[in-house]
Amino acid sequence: MPSLEKIRAIFDTIGQGNMPGFFAHVDDNVEWTVKGTFCPISGQYKSKEAFHNGTKALSSTWATPLKLVVQDIVHDGRNKAAVELKAVDVKCKDGLPFTNEYVWVCHFNDEDRIVRINAFMDTDLVTRAIQQNPA
Image (tube, rainbow, N blue to C red):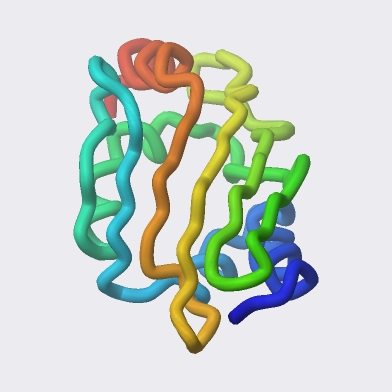
């Protein structure tokens, strides 16, 4: 099971804008749920590929790389952690500041790979970013 230091190291990669470095720690068959009722990208994704395809409507809006900086981590000492993240220095193509804040509740397997994520965020900001920056 990952230590708090290992979890921080995994998430520090996305604080540097290194999304591939982060996704190297995510299982190919991750179960990733984006919470929300009316948000265009809300739903349940059953793999990394499905997540990437399902969230392109958002990722295509950014004019700058997504950087998510760790604000806090709550770790159960076993296989679960809640990671609070904040987008910094991110703008959409139309100039909208993308200052989203997230909490990802992550479940890890015995190889310290993320196998499940429940993602909570400002879905109104996500919806506005998508509507104002169509692909």
